[in-house]
Length: 146
Image 1 (cartoon, rainbow, N blue to C red):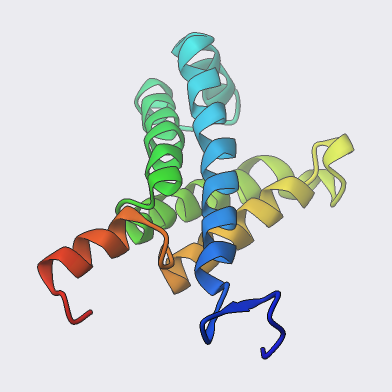
Image 2 (cartoon, rainbow, N blue to C red):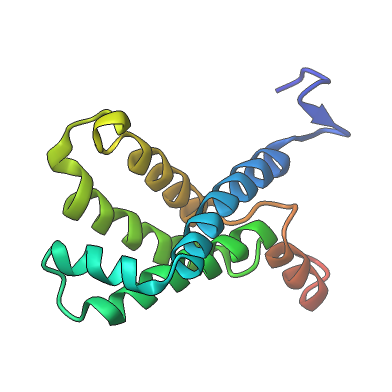
């Protein structure tokens, strides 16, 4: 893109676009994970058990930690592809186990919201964190030519 609004010194704002996607998605996941933790893991355990999930307490902790720590990792841009991978699995399970049977609209418990979060984490898994992230800074310090 040659438009000066979208480029700076010949470089596009791709890194900043991924930064916005990463931080906003990370905040959403971190807040959801914190909510599960602060509200007491028992509520998440009961919900998972009501869905027929085996080892509901174990998976309540797994989901809570994946969302909380995965969200924080996305915000920082640290281990972004790993965090995105775990969050992708989290969203696929939520999509098929909870939301798909309720139709599209989030107001009816549908998959609309989960689908956009899934798209965001799949995008971050495929692209990586972008240039404005700890992942990129760590790679550059280890390999200055990167």
